[in-house]
Image 1: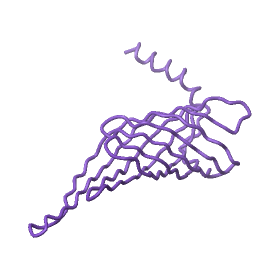
Image 2: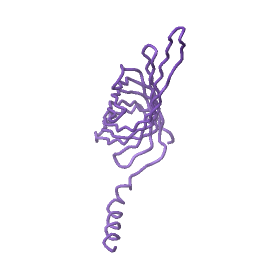
Image 3: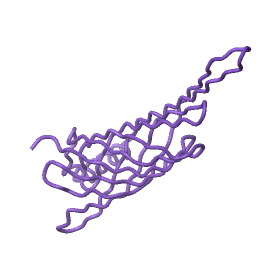
Image 4: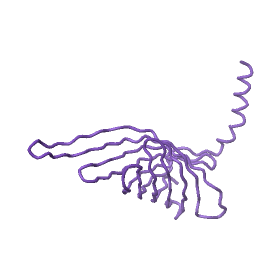
Length: 177
């Protein structure tokens, strides 16, 4: 028991400095759009709302909501994904460009619908919904336009049952001072 307490105190002492430069909270909000290439259907356009949740040293936290849909003939697929992403920013002295590597998790809520018409036998539609867990890996860069606005771009791959490749770009508006 004493060893456990000593280890916990040592960890608290060592990691305390890591959070000394943290700035957590809602720091900005923005929109991204771009190409979404799901594993099972053709590419489509995706829209993503993002929230900058602050930084801990060179790590930034982001929450997002991504939506895309695709229709082919009488069938359609929709995805509404809620994600949490961590970004590691590489240091670039005196540069407005800030490259990053990213990784995160997400919950994808899919809905697939098929309309059918069998003439005199009848018509209708069927739908199936599913919720899938995914892991996201990627990278990109931010470009600071001014103190309030940043251009952001990211290339990412979502692993798991909801596999998809995304290329998204947009703008982030910084809140506060």
